[in-house]
Image 1 (tube, rainbow, N blue to C red):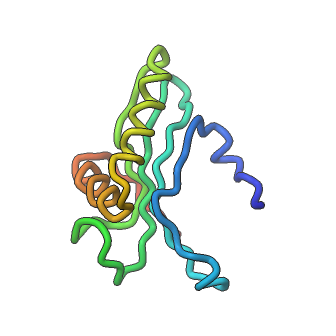
Image 2: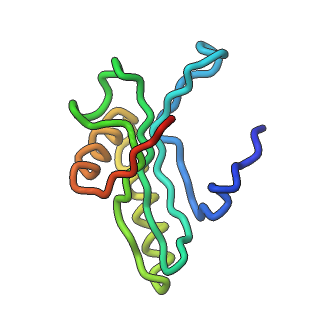
Image 3: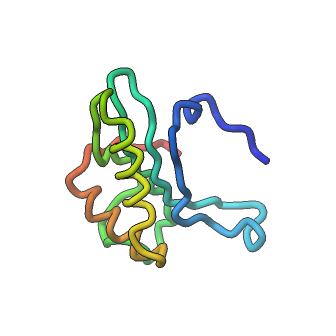
Length: 116
């Protein structure tokens, strides 16, 4: 089991929507799509982390790998923030359709480029 990095210790809820099968690719690369809700200094944020391979056909064409701030909630809306994150990550039994929906939301979201 991997220990959580310091940056993820403020996560209230998280779900890996899809990730590389480590049994098939034990040495990497590791790709993933993740949704999480975290405690920020003055509220709660829902993030979509997109780290797919360049040649991966999942999601909407043209969406870049990055961290996307999908929605922000005030300090008094903790439960609503968690509920929204859960609903986004579990909107469909198919991980591919969830990634497509998240990619569509990401088009209007604040993007934080990643150097990973």
